Length: 497
Image 1 (tube, rainbow, N blue to C red):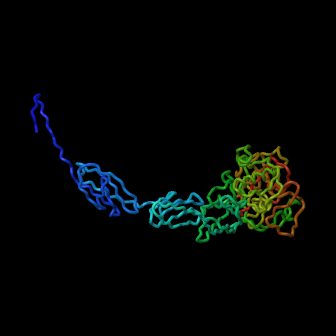
Image 2 (cartoon, one colour):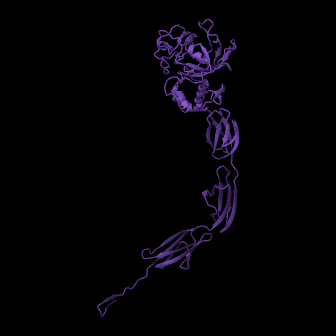
Image 3 (cartoon, rainbow, N blue to C red):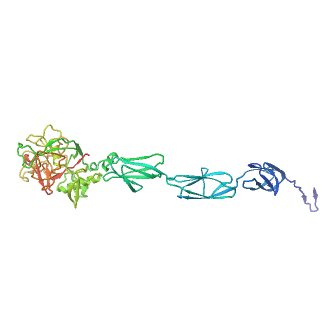
């Protein structure tokens, strides 16, 4: 009603009409008792007519956790609906485990300890850890029941056989376990094995034993030198510019025949043979190459001289060490005290090897000189005491001029057969053998002959820029020296295998 007031104002009275609607309650499982606003209204599914407002709801089903909620019936939502997924009443399992750090699972799903599980149902509880035999137990608990479970896992073991192409020490996870061939029962855990052998590259492998079958773990043991070759890495000597040639020497008689003119009494005719291929440097070692070893010295391509026999041997040991080869020479306080004949390490060529490349290699017959047996020099044959040495040397090769008054850079003259340079001249060369005037057994054939066991100094082969007599350029000439000299250098060698 609208009433006109004395002051002219109009007041409107509005009567509110209550909202009505329905509230629907459902559950899974169905049949749960429903209390709405404190009154039991039936079992799910149930629909109740109500006016607008907020209504507390309680849903109960035996063996399941009760649900409490509030449902609002409003202008915007006159038919509110609820569908409750009831949760079974829970029970608790407390688990103790050994070893710790494994995985706890309930019906295959990860779980945390203590475990909450549905009551009145069977559950499979499993504990597992890598390297151990897993265990499982089945439980069925009543509502709110609490149970204690214990898992004590035993190690899972597997059989592993270790083998290598060379007898090698086997280290498993850092601990020595045996020598190949070697067999062991090991826990089925990811592990690391190392195969170790002196002089060989250590081989490391990852493996994991299996309890179902024997695991075979094998290693190819390679000397460090061979491992680097397999990896395609260059020889260290190559990085220094040292060129090596491989030879397969054949049986021959070193020294000079008794009818060779100007023959020396120390040029013993020793029968020698070879069981292994050998590598020999094509050039004499240069000042620059030797300086890389010493850390000082000339950086030229001149052959290094004023080097003692021991210093030359130490240089070859240094090369071996750079390439992972067992050093050929045994050293004490800077002096060579012995050799390892089984070593493939670098060394000085033997006198037999030097003579082979000087007068046998790629020839039908042995020759007197490096260039052949003819008694004259071809033009620019090699670096000897030529006309430029007149007044400086007692003997010179008259009418011969090689273009150098002193040393010449290695490779300045044409290579002889087999590709070796400066065998006949430039500088004399230390070889491995000890020097002695006493001949060995001349009826015997010596295989891989290393010369006399002891002597007075070491053998020097070849001629130099100071040599001015043809007879002293013969390939069989040998001298014994104990000290370095300005015209004595060396080249290097090593066995192939």
